[in-house]
Amino acid sequence: MTSHLSALVWTLYLAPLVAAGSILCITQRNKGAAASLAIVASMISCLGSWIIFFKGTDFAVEGIKWIDFGEALSIPIGMIVDPLSRTMLVVVTSIATLVFIYSIGYMREESGYARFFAGLAFFLFSMLGIVLANNFIMLFISWELVGFSSYLLIMHFFEKNSAADAGKQAFIVNRIGDFGFLIGILLLWVATGGISFSTINHSLSLFSQHPTLLACSLVFIFCGTVGKSAQFPLHVWLPNSMEGPTPVSSLLHAATMVAAGVYMLARIFPLLSFSPGAREVILWVGAITTLGAAFLGTQQNDFKRVLAYSTISQLGYMVTAVGVATTAAVPMFHLFTHAFFKCLLFLTSGSVMVSMHHELNIWKMGGLRKRMPITFVTFLCGMLALAGCPFFSGSFSKDLIMKFAFEQNKIVFWMIVTAAGLTAFYITRVCIVAFFGTPRTEQARTAPESPLVMTIPLIMLSIPAIFSGYPLITRYFIAPLGSLELPKETPAYVELIFILFFLVGTVTAWAIYRKASKDPIEIPLLVNRFYIDALYDWCVEKIQGGFANAMAFIDRWVIDGFIVQGIASLIWSFGFVLRFLQVGNLQAYTLFLGGGVIGIIVLLMRIH
Image 1 (cartoon, rainbow, N blue to C red):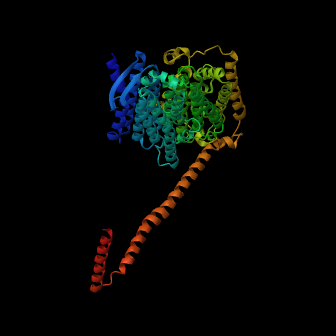
Image 2: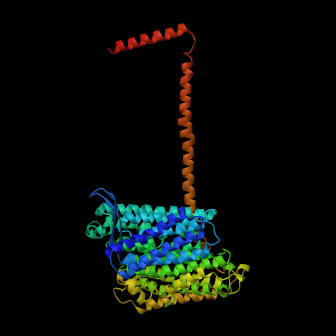
Protein backbone atom coordinates (compact mmCIF):
# COMPACT_ATOMS: atom_id res chain seq x y z
CA MET A 1 0.00 0.00 0.00
CA THR A 2 2.76 2.43 0.98
CA SER A 3 4.59 1.84 -2.31
CA HIS A 4 1.44 2.77 -4.25
CA LEU A 5 0.99 5.92 -2.17
CA SER A 6 4.66 6.82 -2.68
CA ALA A 7 4.19 6.51 -6.44
CA LEU A 8 1.10 8.71 -6.17
CA VAL A 9 3.08 11.35 -4.26
CA TRP A 10 5.78 11.41 -6.93
CA THR A 11 3.08 11.68 -9.62
CA LEU A 12 1.26 14.62 -8.05
CA TYR A 13 4.59 16.32 -7.38
CA LEU A 14 6.09 15.96 -10.87
CA ALA A 15 2.92 16.39 -12.98
CA PRO A 16 3.08 20.23 -12.97
CA LEU A 17 6.79 20.16 -13.88
CA VAL A 18 6.10 17.88 -16.84
CA ALA A 19 3.26 20.18 -17.91
CA ALA A 20 5.46 23.29 -17.68
CA GLY A 21 8.19 21.69 -19.78
CA SER A 22 5.71 20.39 -22.34
CA ILE A 23 4.06 23.79 -22.72
CA LEU A 24 7.37 25.55 -23.34
CA CYS A 25 8.76 22.89 -25.69
CA ILE A 26 5.72 21.65 -27.58
CA THR A 27 2.55 23.73 -27.25
CA GLN A 28 3.85 27.29 -26.92
CA ARG A 29 1.92 28.46 -29.99
CA ASN A 30 -1.26 26.56 -29.17
CA LYS A 31 -3.14 28.48 -26.48
CA GLY A 32 -5.80 25.83 -25.94
CA ALA A 33 -3.31 23.00 -25.58
CA ALA A 34 -1.15 25.03 -23.19
CA ALA A 35 -4.06 25.80 -20.87
CA SER A 36 -5.34 22.21 -21.06
CA LEU A 37 -1.95 20.75 -20.14
CA ALA A 38 -1.61 23.02 -17.11
CA ILE A 39 -5.15 22.36 -15.91
CA VAL A 40 -4.87 18.59 -16.36
CA ALA A 41 -1.61 18.60 -14.39
CA SER A 42 -3.16 20.63 -11.57
CA MET A 43 -6.17 18.30 -11.52
CA ILE A 44 -3.87 15.27 -11.27
CA SER A 45 -2.09 16.91 -8.33
CA CYS A 46 -5.41 17.89 -6.76
CA LEU A 47 -6.94 14.42 -7.13
CA GLY A 48 -3.80 12.78 -5.75
CA SER A 49 -3.80 15.17 -2.79
CA TRP A 50 -7.40 14.35 -1.90
CA ILE A 51 -6.74 10.61 -2.18
CA ILE A 52 -3.75 10.90 0.17
CA PHE A 53 -5.78 13.07 2.54
CA PHE A 54 -8.62 10.58 2.81
CA LYS A 55 -6.19 7.68 3.25
CA GLY A 56 -4.91 9.44 6.36
CA THR A 57 -1.66 7.45 6.39
CA ASP A 58 1.60 8.96 7.62
CA PHE A 59 4.64 7.79 5.68
CA ALA A 60 7.99 8.87 4.31
CA VAL A 61 8.67 8.75 0.59
CA GLU A 62 12.17 7.45 0.05
CA GLY A 63 13.97 9.26 -2.71
CA ILE A 64 17.55 9.45 -3.87
CA LYS A 65 20.72 10.52 -2.11
CA TRP A 66 21.64 13.73 -3.83
CA ILE A 67 24.80 14.50 -1.80
CA ASP A 68 26.53 11.95 0.44
CA PHE A 69 29.67 12.73 2.43
CA GLY A 70 29.21 9.86 4.84
CA GLU A 71 28.56 10.84 8.43
CA ALA A 72 29.56 14.46 7.82
CA LEU A 73 26.63 15.35 5.54
CA SER A 74 23.98 13.41 3.69
CA ILE A 75 21.29 15.21 1.69
CA PRO A 76 18.51 13.01 0.29
CA ILE A 77 15.71 14.06 -2.03
CA GLY A 78 12.77 12.64 -0.15
CA MET A 79 9.28 13.60 0.96
CA ILE A 80 7.15 13.30 4.04
CA VAL A 81 3.39 12.84 4.29
CA ASP A 82 1.89 13.70 7.67
CA PRO A 83 -1.21 15.63 8.86
CA LEU A 84 0.49 18.99 8.21
CA SER A 85 1.53 18.23 4.63
CA ARG A 86 -1.78 16.50 3.84
CA THR A 87 -3.80 19.56 4.82
CA MET A 88 -1.51 21.91 2.95
CA LEU A 89 -1.52 19.70 -0.16
CA VAL A 90 -5.31 19.87 -0.35
CA VAL A 91 -5.36 23.65 0.10
CA VAL A 92 -2.63 24.37 -2.45
CA THR A 93 -3.77 22.02 -5.21
CA SER A 94 -7.50 22.76 -4.85
CA ILE A 95 -7.01 26.51 -5.04
CA ALA A 96 -4.45 26.17 -7.82
CA THR A 97 -6.88 24.16 -9.95
CA LEU A 98 -9.62 26.79 -9.58
CA VAL A 99 -7.18 29.60 -10.37
CA PHE A 100 -5.92 27.73 -13.45
CA ILE A 101 -9.49 27.39 -14.73
CA TYR A 102 -10.28 31.03 -13.95
CA SER A 103 -7.17 32.09 -15.88
CA ILE A 104 -8.64 30.77 -19.13
CA GLY A 105 -11.15 33.61 -19.10
CA TYR A 106 -8.91 36.23 -17.54
CA MET A 107 -5.96 35.74 -19.90
CA ARG A 108 -7.87 35.03 -23.10
CA GLU A 109 -6.93 38.37 -24.71
CA GLU A 110 -3.56 38.88 -23.02
CA SER A 111 -0.10 38.30 -24.46
CA GLY A 112 2.17 35.45 -23.38
CA TYR A 113 -0.74 33.04 -22.83
CA ALA A 114 1.28 29.80 -23.02
CA ARG A 115 4.19 31.30 -21.09
CA PHE A 116 1.77 32.30 -18.34
CA PHE A 117 0.37 28.78 -17.91
CA ALA A 118 3.87 27.31 -17.99
CA GLY A 119 4.83 29.70 -15.19
CA LEU A 120 1.76 28.73 -13.15
CA ALA A 121 2.54 25.03 -13.54
CA PHE A 122 6.18 25.52 -12.58
CA PHE A 123 5.14 27.53 -9.55
CA LEU A 124 2.79 24.75 -8.44
CA PHE A 125 5.62 22.22 -8.75
CA SER A 126 7.89 24.46 -6.65
CA MET A 127 5.24 25.00 -3.99
CA LEU A 128 4.56 21.27 -3.70
CA GLY A 129 8.28 20.81 -3.08
CA ILE A 130 8.02 23.06 -0.02
CA VAL A 131 4.97 21.21 1.28
CA LEU A 132 6.43 17.72 0.83
CA ALA A 133 10.10 18.36 1.72
CA ASN A 134 11.46 16.13 4.49
CA ASN A 135 14.61 18.19 5.06
CA PHE A 136 15.74 21.79 5.12
CA ILE A 137 17.85 21.60 1.97
CA MET A 138 15.03 20.34 -0.24
CA LEU A 139 12.75 22.90 1.38
CA PHE A 140 15.27 25.67 0.70
CA ILE A 141 15.75 24.65 -2.94
CA SER A 142 11.98 24.59 -3.49
CA TRP A 143 11.77 27.87 -1.56
CA GLU A 144 14.14 29.49 -4.06
CA LEU A 145 12.28 27.98 -7.02
CA VAL A 146 9.07 29.51 -5.68
CA GLY A 147 10.84 32.87 -5.52
CA PHE A 148 12.11 32.49 -9.08
CA SER A 149 8.74 31.43 -10.50
CA SER A 150 6.98 34.27 -8.67
CA TYR A 151 9.51 36.67 -10.21
CA LEU A 152 8.59 35.39 -13.68
CA LEU A 153 4.85 35.60 -13.02
CA ILE A 154 4.86 39.04 -11.38
CA MET A 155 6.71 40.54 -14.36
CA HIS A 156 4.64 38.61 -16.91
CA PHE A 157 3.78 41.92 -18.60
CA PHE A 158 7.46 42.83 -18.71
CA GLU A 159 6.83 45.45 -21.40
CA LYS A 160 5.49 47.64 -18.57
CA ASN A 161 8.30 49.19 -16.55
CA SER A 162 6.21 49.00 -13.38
CA ALA A 163 5.74 45.22 -13.78
CA ALA A 164 9.43 44.65 -14.49
CA ASP A 165 10.41 46.76 -11.48
CA ALA A 166 7.92 44.92 -9.25
CA GLY A 167 9.33 41.55 -10.28
CA LYS A 168 12.88 42.67 -9.57
CA GLN A 169 11.89 44.15 -6.22
CA ALA A 170 10.13 40.95 -5.14
CA PHE A 171 13.14 38.87 -6.14
CA ILE A 172 15.71 41.09 -4.40
CA VAL A 173 13.76 41.64 -1.17
CA ASN A 174 13.12 37.91 -0.81
CA ARG A 175 16.81 37.19 -1.27
CA ILE A 176 17.53 39.34 1.78
CA GLY A 177 15.29 37.17 3.93
CA ASP A 178 16.55 33.99 2.31
CA PHE A 179 20.14 34.84 3.22
CA GLY A 180 19.15 34.81 6.89
CA PHE A 181 17.16 31.63 6.33
CA LEU A 182 20.24 29.88 4.95
CA ILE A 183 22.36 30.99 7.91
CA GLY A 184 19.75 29.55 10.27
CA ILE A 185 19.79 26.21 8.44
CA LEU A 186 23.59 26.06 8.68
CA LEU A 187 23.47 26.80 12.43
CA LEU A 188 20.98 23.97 12.94
CA TRP A 189 23.20 21.62 10.94
CA VAL A 190 26.24 22.57 13.05
CA ALA A 191 24.26 21.94 16.24
CA THR A 192 22.57 18.65 15.30
CA GLY A 193 24.71 17.22 12.51
CA GLY A 194 21.65 16.75 10.29
CA ILE A 195 19.26 18.71 8.11
CA SER A 196 16.22 16.42 8.03
CA PHE A 197 13.23 17.39 10.16
CA SER A 198 13.19 14.01 11.90
CA THR A 199 16.89 14.27 12.87
CA ILE A 200 16.44 17.78 14.24
CA ASN A 201 13.30 16.85 16.19
CA HIS A 202 15.14 13.90 17.74
CA SER A 203 17.93 16.25 18.81
CA LEU A 204 15.75 18.66 20.76
CA SER A 205 17.50 17.75 24.01
CA LEU A 206 20.72 19.27 22.62
CA PHE A 207 19.12 22.68 22.44
CA SER A 208 18.17 22.69 26.12
CA GLN A 209 21.93 22.83 26.74
CA HIS A 210 22.52 25.58 24.13
CA PRO A 211 19.48 27.91 24.25
CA THR A 212 21.35 30.84 22.69
CA LEU A 213 22.35 28.78 19.66
CA LEU A 214 18.75 27.63 19.21
CA ALA A 215 17.38 31.17 19.53
CA CYS A 216 19.89 32.53 17.00
CA SER A 217 19.20 29.77 14.47
CA LEU A 218 15.42 30.19 14.79
CA VAL A 219 15.56 33.98 14.43
CA PHE A 220 17.68 33.59 11.29
CA ILE A 221 15.26 30.98 9.94
CA PHE A 222 12.41 33.37 10.72
CA CYS A 223 14.09 35.88 8.38
CA GLY A 224 12.96 33.60 5.55
CA THR A 225 9.37 33.96 6.74
CA VAL A 226 9.76 37.74 7.05
CA GLY A 227 10.73 37.90 3.38
CA LYS A 228 8.42 35.28 1.91
CA SER A 229 5.37 36.14 4.04
CA ALA A 230 5.88 39.91 3.64
CA GLN A 231 6.36 40.79 7.31
CA PHE A 232 7.73 44.11 8.52
CA PRO A 233 10.25 45.39 7.46
CA LEU A 234 10.42 43.28 4.25
CA HIS A 235 6.74 43.74 3.38
CA VAL A 236 7.25 46.37 0.67
CA TRP A 237 7.43 43.95 -2.26
CA LEU A 238 3.92 42.50 -1.94
CA PRO A 239 1.78 45.59 -2.72
CA ASN A 240 3.96 46.40 -5.74
CA SER A 241 3.67 42.81 -6.98
CA MET A 242 0.01 43.55 -7.78
CA GLU A 243 1.38 44.63 -11.17
CA GLY A 244 1.22 40.96 -12.14
CA PRO A 245 -1.92 39.33 -13.57
CA THR A 246 -4.72 38.94 -10.99
CA PRO A 247 -4.62 35.10 -11.01
CA VAL A 248 -0.97 35.42 -9.97
CA SER A 249 -1.96 37.71 -7.11
CA SER A 250 -4.62 35.23 -6.07
CA LEU A 251 -2.48 32.10 -6.22
CA LEU A 252 0.87 33.43 -5.03
CA HIS A 253 -0.08 36.16 -2.63
CA ALA A 254 -3.18 34.75 -0.97
CA ALA A 255 -3.08 31.01 -0.79
CA THR A 256 0.35 29.59 -1.44
CA MET A 257 3.62 31.50 -1.78
CA VAL A 258 3.19 34.00 1.05
CA ALA A 259 1.71 31.27 3.24
CA ALA A 260 4.87 29.19 2.74
CA GLY A 261 6.63 31.15 5.47
CA VAL A 262 3.90 30.36 7.99
CA TYR A 263 3.86 26.72 6.88
CA MET A 264 7.61 26.52 7.47
CA LEU A 265 7.16 27.87 11.01
CA ALA A 266 4.45 25.28 11.62
CA ARG A 267 6.85 22.59 10.40
CA ILE A 268 9.48 23.60 12.98
CA PHE A 269 6.98 24.38 15.76
CA PRO A 270 8.50 21.75 18.13
CA LEU A 271 11.77 23.70 17.95
CA LEU A 272 10.04 27.00 18.68
CA SER A 273 8.57 25.64 21.90
CA PHE A 274 12.15 25.33 23.23
CA SER A 275 12.99 29.00 22.56
CA PRO A 276 10.79 31.62 24.28
CA GLY A 277 13.15 34.36 23.08
CA ALA A 278 12.70 33.49 19.41
CA ARG A 279 8.92 33.26 19.84
CA GLU A 280 8.91 36.70 21.44
CA VAL A 281 10.62 38.13 18.34
CA ILE A 282 8.13 36.33 16.10
CA LEU A 283 5.21 37.58 18.19
CA TRP A 284 6.12 41.26 17.99
CA VAL A 285 7.01 41.21 14.30
CA GLY A 286 3.63 39.61 13.59
CA ALA A 287 1.70 42.07 15.76
CA ILE A 288 3.41 45.15 14.31
CA THR A 289 2.79 43.87 10.77
CA THR A 290 -0.86 43.11 11.53
CA LEU A 291 -1.65 46.58 12.83
CA GLY A 292 0.58 48.57 10.47
CA ALA A 293 -0.75 46.92 7.30
CA ALA A 294 -4.34 47.35 8.51
CA PHE A 295 -3.79 51.10 8.86
CA LEU A 296 -2.30 51.28 5.36
CA GLY A 297 -5.24 49.39 3.86
CA THR A 298 -7.62 52.18 4.89
CA GLN A 299 -6.07 54.71 2.49
CA GLN A 300 -5.60 52.65 -0.67
CA ASN A 301 -7.77 53.41 -3.71
CA ASP A 302 -6.49 50.58 -5.90
CA PHE A 303 -8.77 47.53 -5.52
CA LYS A 304 -5.92 45.01 -5.55
CA ARG A 305 -3.64 47.06 -3.30
CA VAL A 306 -6.29 47.08 -0.58
CA LEU A 307 -6.33 43.29 -0.78
CA ALA A 308 -2.52 43.25 -0.82
CA TYR A 309 -2.30 45.13 2.48
CA SER A 310 -5.06 42.97 3.92
CA THR A 311 -2.96 39.93 2.96
CA ILE A 312 0.05 41.36 4.80
CA SER A 313 -2.14 42.04 7.83
CA GLN A 314 -3.68 38.55 7.83
CA LEU A 315 -0.25 36.97 7.49
CA GLY A 316 0.67 39.03 10.54
CA TYR A 317 -2.19 37.33 12.39
CA MET A 318 -0.74 33.93 11.49
CA VAL A 319 2.77 34.91 12.60
CA THR A 320 1.34 36.33 15.82
CA ALA A 321 -0.43 33.01 16.36
CA VAL A 322 2.92 31.22 16.10
CA GLY A 323 4.13 33.43 18.93
CA VAL A 324 1.18 32.89 21.29
CA ALA A 325 -0.31 29.48 20.49
CA THR A 326 0.51 26.16 22.11
CA THR A 327 0.29 24.12 18.88
CA ALA A 328 0.84 24.65 15.17
CA ALA A 329 -2.87 24.05 14.61
CA VAL A 330 -3.76 27.64 15.55
CA PRO A 331 -1.73 29.49 12.86
CA MET A 332 -2.57 26.76 10.34
CA PHE A 333 -6.27 27.22 11.10
CA HIS A 334 -6.12 30.86 10.00
CA LEU A 335 -3.92 29.95 7.03
CA PHE A 336 -6.59 27.41 6.03
CA THR A 337 -9.56 29.80 6.21
CA HIS A 338 -7.63 32.77 4.80
CA ALA A 339 -6.50 30.84 1.74
CA PHE A 340 -10.07 30.43 0.51
CA PHE A 341 -11.59 33.81 1.27
CA LYS A 342 -8.53 35.77 0.13
CA CYS A 343 -8.26 33.81 -3.11
CA LEU A 344 -11.95 34.54 -3.65
CA LEU A 345 -11.46 38.27 -3.04
CA PHE A 346 -8.57 38.51 -5.48
CA LEU A 347 -10.49 36.65 -8.17
CA THR A 348 -13.51 38.93 -7.71
CA SER A 349 -11.18 41.91 -8.13
CA GLY A 350 -9.98 40.32 -11.36
CA SER A 351 -13.57 39.89 -12.50
CA VAL A 352 -14.21 43.58 -11.85
CA MET A 353 -10.95 44.52 -13.53
CA VAL A 354 -11.81 42.66 -16.75
CA SER A 355 -15.30 44.18 -16.91
CA MET A 356 -13.92 47.65 -16.20
CA HIS A 357 -11.28 47.37 -18.96
CA HIS A 358 -8.45 46.97 -16.43
CA GLU A 359 -9.49 49.93 -14.29
CA LEU A 360 -8.73 49.31 -10.59
CA ASN A 361 -9.42 52.71 -9.01
CA ILE A 362 -12.46 52.12 -6.80
CA TRP A 363 -13.49 55.78 -7.18
CA LYS A 364 -14.06 55.16 -10.90
CA MET A 365 -16.50 52.35 -10.17
CA GLY A 366 -19.85 52.44 -8.36
CA GLY A 367 -23.14 50.58 -8.74
CA LEU A 368 -21.45 47.36 -9.88
CA ARG A 369 -23.71 45.16 -7.74
CA LYS A 370 -26.47 45.60 -10.32
CA ARG A 371 -24.21 45.05 -13.33
CA MET A 372 -22.25 42.13 -11.85
CA PRO A 373 -24.53 40.31 -9.37
CA ILE A 374 -22.52 37.05 -9.17
CA THR A 375 -19.26 38.89 -8.63
CA PHE A 376 -20.92 41.09 -6.00
CA VAL A 377 -22.46 38.24 -3.98
CA THR A 378 -19.24 36.22 -4.02
CA PHE A 379 -17.24 39.31 -3.06
CA LEU A 380 -19.64 39.81 -0.16
CA CYS A 381 -18.90 36.27 1.07
CA GLY A 382 -15.16 36.89 0.98
CA MET A 383 -15.52 40.35 2.49
CA LEU A 384 -17.51 39.14 5.50
CA ALA A 385 -15.06 36.29 6.08
CA LEU A 386 -12.11 38.71 5.98
CA ALA A 387 -13.84 41.23 8.25
CA GLY A 388 -14.54 38.54 10.84
CA CYS A 389 -18.32 38.58 10.60
CA PRO A 390 -19.82 35.97 12.95
CA PHE A 391 -20.64 32.62 11.33
CA PHE A 392 -18.17 33.20 8.49
CA SER A 393 -14.91 31.23 8.37
CA GLY A 394 -12.55 34.08 9.22
CA SER A 395 -14.32 34.83 12.49
CA PHE A 396 -13.55 31.37 13.89
CA SER A 397 -9.81 31.44 13.24
CA LYS A 398 -9.33 35.12 14.14
CA ASP A 399 -11.30 34.75 17.35
CA LEU A 400 -9.08 31.85 18.41
CA ILE A 401 -5.89 33.86 17.81
CA MET A 402 -7.28 36.76 19.83
CA LYS A 403 -8.12 34.50 22.75
CA PHE A 404 -4.60 33.09 22.82
CA ALA A 405 -3.19 36.63 22.57
CA PHE A 406 -5.41 37.74 25.46
CA GLU A 407 -3.92 35.01 27.65
CA GLN A 408 -0.31 35.63 26.59
CA ASN A 409 0.11 39.37 26.00
CA LYS A 410 -2.55 42.05 26.54
CA ILE A 411 -0.73 44.68 24.45
CA VAL A 412 -0.59 42.35 21.46
CA PHE A 413 -4.25 41.50 22.03
CA TRP A 414 -5.32 45.13 21.72
CA MET A 415 -3.09 45.61 18.69
CA ILE A 416 -4.68 42.77 16.74
CA VAL A 417 -8.21 43.65 17.91
CA THR A 418 -7.67 47.19 16.60
CA ALA A 419 -6.43 45.67 13.34
CA ALA A 420 -9.64 43.62 13.17
CA GLY A 421 -11.73 46.80 13.39
CA LEU A 422 -9.62 48.48 10.71
CA THR A 423 -9.98 45.39 8.50
CA ALA A 424 -13.77 45.60 8.71
CA PHE A 425 -13.51 49.33 7.93
CA TYR A 426 -11.34 49.16 4.80
CA ILE A 427 -12.99 46.14 3.18
CA THR A 428 -16.46 47.65 3.79
CA ARG A 429 -15.14 50.88 2.25
CA VAL A 430 -14.16 49.01 -0.91
CA CYS A 431 -17.53 47.27 -1.08
CA ILE A 432 -19.53 50.50 -0.70
CA VAL A 433 -17.46 52.59 -3.10
CA ALA A 434 -17.15 49.93 -5.83
CA PHE A 435 -20.48 48.11 -5.67
CA PHE A 436 -23.00 50.59 -4.22
CA GLY A 437 -24.10 54.08 -5.20
CA THR A 438 -24.27 55.20 -8.82
CA PRO A 439 -21.73 54.49 -11.58
CA ARG A 440 -19.05 57.18 -11.75
CA THR A 441 -17.68 56.34 -15.22
CA GLU A 442 -18.92 54.97 -18.52
CA GLN A 443 -17.04 51.70 -17.89
CA ALA A 444 -18.98 51.22 -14.65
CA ARG A 445 -22.30 51.99 -16.35
CA THR A 446 -21.73 49.35 -19.03
CA ALA A 447 -19.68 46.75 -17.11
CA PRO A 448 -20.85 43.21 -18.02
CA GLU A 449 -20.80 40.18 -15.75
CA SER A 450 -17.77 37.94 -16.28
CA PRO A 451 -18.10 34.69 -18.27
CA LEU A 452 -18.90 31.38 -16.58
CA VAL A 453 -15.31 30.17 -16.75
CA MET A 454 -14.53 33.00 -14.31
CA THR A 455 -17.68 33.06 -12.17
CA ILE A 456 -17.87 29.30 -11.49
CA PRO A 457 -14.56 29.33 -9.54
CA LEU A 458 -15.92 32.32 -7.60
CA ILE A 459 -19.03 30.40 -6.61
CA MET A 460 -17.02 27.32 -5.65
CA LEU A 461 -14.64 29.38 -3.48
CA SER A 462 -17.56 31.07 -1.74
CA ILE A 463 -18.50 27.78 -0.09
CA PRO A 464 -15.26 27.28 1.90
CA ALA A 465 -15.07 31.06 2.46
CA ILE A 466 -18.21 30.65 4.55
CA PHE A 467 -17.92 27.16 6.03
CA SER A 468 -14.20 26.27 6.31
CA GLY A 469 -14.07 27.46 9.93
CA TYR A 470 -16.90 25.29 11.23
CA PRO A 471 -16.06 22.41 13.64
CA LEU A 472 -17.24 19.77 11.17
CA ILE A 473 -14.51 20.90 8.74
CA THR A 474 -11.77 21.61 11.27
CA ARG A 475 -12.23 18.17 12.82
CA TYR A 476 -10.71 16.62 9.69
CA PHE A 477 -8.36 19.32 8.40
CA ILE A 478 -7.04 21.14 11.49
CA ALA A 479 -7.60 18.97 14.58
CA PRO A 480 -4.97 16.37 13.50
CA LEU A 481 -2.35 19.14 13.64
CA GLY A 482 -2.85 19.76 17.36
CA SER A 483 -5.30 21.03 19.91
CA LEU A 484 -7.30 24.19 19.30
CA GLU A 485 -8.28 24.37 22.96
CA LEU A 486 -7.07 27.17 25.20
CA PRO A 487 -5.10 26.25 28.34
CA LYS A 488 -7.83 27.86 30.43
CA GLU A 489 -11.23 29.40 29.93
CA THR A 490 -11.16 32.87 28.37
CA PRO A 491 -13.64 35.50 29.58
CA ALA A 492 -16.73 35.75 27.40
CA TYR A 493 -16.20 39.46 26.87
CA VAL A 494 -13.11 38.77 24.72
CA GLU A 495 -15.32 37.47 21.92
CA LEU A 496 -17.73 40.35 22.45
CA ILE A 497 -14.86 42.84 22.05
CA PHE A 498 -14.00 41.26 18.69
CA ILE A 499 -17.62 41.50 17.51
CA LEU A 500 -17.85 45.10 18.76
CA PHE A 501 -14.77 46.17 16.80
CA PHE A 502 -16.16 44.42 13.70
CA LEU A 503 -19.44 46.32 14.01
CA VAL A 504 -17.74 49.66 14.70
CA GLY A 505 -15.47 49.27 11.67
CA THR A 506 -18.31 48.25 9.36
CA VAL A 507 -20.79 50.91 10.51
CA THR A 508 -18.17 53.67 10.44
CA ALA A 509 -17.24 52.84 6.84
CA TRP A 510 -20.90 52.78 5.84
CA ALA A 511 -21.57 56.15 7.48
CA ILE A 512 -18.55 57.84 5.87
CA TYR A 513 -18.64 56.40 2.34
CA ARG A 514 -22.27 55.61 1.45
CA LYS A 515 -22.74 58.99 -0.24
CA ALA A 516 -19.14 59.98 -0.90
CA SER A 517 -17.98 60.81 -4.44
CA LYS A 518 -14.35 61.10 -3.35
CA ASP A 519 -12.43 60.05 -0.28
CA PRO A 520 -13.21 62.50 2.56
CA ILE A 521 -10.30 61.14 4.60
CA GLU A 522 -6.74 61.65 3.46
CA ILE A 523 -3.89 61.05 5.89
CA PRO A 524 -0.50 61.73 4.22
CA LEU A 525 1.34 59.38 6.58
CA LEU A 526 -0.86 56.47 5.45
CA VAL A 527 -1.15 57.55 1.81
CA ASN A 528 2.65 57.50 1.66
CA ARG A 529 2.79 54.14 3.47
CA PHE A 530 4.58 55.46 6.57
CA TYR A 531 7.26 56.72 4.13
CA ILE A 532 8.93 53.32 4.43
CA ASP A 533 9.11 52.87 0.66
CA ALA A 534 10.56 56.37 0.30
CA LEU A 535 13.11 55.58 3.02
CA TYR A 536 14.16 52.40 1.25
CA ASP A 537 14.39 54.23 -2.07
CA TRP A 538 16.57 56.90 -0.44
CA CYS A 539 18.80 54.31 1.20
CA VAL A 540 19.20 52.36 -2.03
CA GLU A 541 19.88 55.56 -3.95
CA LYS A 542 22.50 56.70 -1.45
CA ILE A 543 24.14 53.29 -1.09
CA GLN A 544 24.02 52.61 -4.81
CA GLY A 545 25.12 56.17 -5.58
CA GLY A 546 27.98 56.00 -3.08
CA PHE A 547 29.08 52.64 -4.39
CA ALA A 548 28.88 53.90 -7.98
CA ASN A 549 30.93 57.00 -7.12
CA ALA A 550 33.55 54.86 -5.35
CA MET A 551 33.76 52.52 -8.34
CA ALA A 552 34.02 55.50 -10.70
CA PHE A 553 36.91 56.90 -8.62
CA ILE A 554 38.70 53.53 -8.59
CA ASP A 555 38.13 53.06 -12.32
CA ARG A 556 39.32 56.57 -13.22
CA TRP A 557 42.24 57.09 -10.86
CA VAL A 558 43.38 53.62 -9.79
CA ILE A 559 42.73 51.40 -12.81
CA ASP A 560 42.96 53.93 -15.66
CA GLY A 561 45.15 56.49 -13.90
CA PHE A 562 47.63 54.43 -11.91
CA ILE A 563 47.62 50.95 -13.45
CA VAL A 564 46.97 51.58 -17.15
CA GLN A 565 48.41 55.08 -17.59
CA GLY A 566 51.12 54.50 -14.95
CA ILE A 567 52.48 51.39 -16.60
CA ALA A 568 52.32 53.09 -20.01
CA SER A 569 54.24 56.11 -18.66
CA LEU A 570 56.82 53.85 -16.99
CA ILE A 571 57.44 51.98 -20.24
CA TRP A 572 57.65 55.26 -22.16
CA SER A 573 60.17 56.66 -19.63
CA PHE A 574 62.26 53.51 -19.80
CA GLY A 575 62.26 53.76 -23.59
CA PHE A 576 63.13 57.44 -23.39
CA VAL A 577 66.27 56.63 -21.36
CA LEU A 578 67.26 53.78 -23.64
CA ARG A 579 66.89 56.05 -26.65
CA PHE A 580 70.07 57.89 -25.69
CA LEU A 581 72.01 54.64 -26.07
CA GLN A 582 70.82 54.22 -29.65
CA VAL A 583 73.47 56.50 -31.23
CA GLY A 584 73.85 54.57 -34.51
CA ASN A 585 77.69 54.32 -34.22
CA LEU A 586 79.44 50.92 -34.31
CA GLN A 587 82.44 52.15 -32.35
CA ALA A 588 80.19 53.44 -29.57
CA TYR A 589 78.38 50.10 -29.34
CA THR A 590 81.79 48.33 -29.09
CA LEU A 591 82.75 50.71 -26.29
CA PHE A 592 79.49 50.03 -24.41
CA LEU A 593 79.99 46.27 -24.80
CA GLY A 594 83.59 46.41 -23.58
CA GLY A 595 82.64 48.60 -20.65
CA GLY A 596 79.89 46.18 -19.71
CA VAL A 597 82.21 43.18 -19.80
CA ILE A 598 84.81 44.98 -17.68
CA GLY A 599 82.11 45.97 -15.19
CA ILE A 600 80.90 42.36 -14.82
CA ILE A 601 84.51 41.13 -14.31
CA VAL A 602 85.13 43.74 -11.59
CA LEU A 603 81.84 42.82 -9.86
CA LEU A 604 82.68 39.11 -9.84
CA MET A 605 86.18 39.79 -8.47
CA ARG A 606 84.74 41.86 -5.59
CA ILE A 607 82.25 39.08 -4.74
CA HIS A 608 85.00 36.47 -4.51
